[in-house]
Length: 170
Image (cartoon, rainbow, N blue to C red; front, side, top):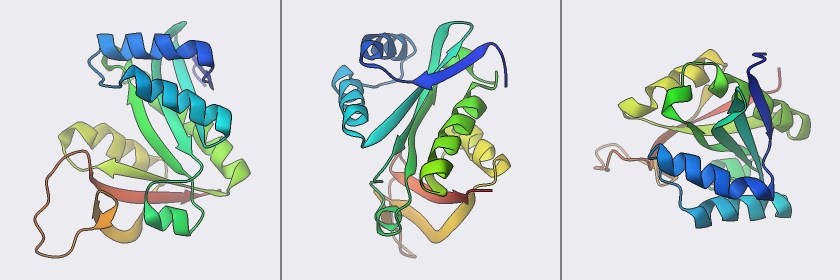
């Protein structure tokens, strides 16, 4: 573990800080969304972890108890969701620390965890991170808005085009 990185669970008093830093770094997360995430933490529907680098907020990651992806729902697989590290804090091990912490929680509670990843270039670092951490495709193929993409179909290459992966407790 990197001593400059602290990972902890979100609190209600973090909402404004997360919104402010994400806005400063052009990570488009409306304040209402961040507040909803906090409310879902209180309700036990989501666990939100925040990372701090040298005492400064650097990123966040969530674990959804019930995924939006039907295959994960049907199989009781929680989903790692909405992974963000602010640009100046990337390549410092922050993402890896967030993943380590959320996997520990997921494995203790569920024994398995899932994740979806986008397919265009800006997701390249995430794709590599998940492969290095031992995630394997769920075998269901490409999804658009959590629904299977059929051969010959035309879909938009945007944030809703994903490949889903799982990892089981080691």
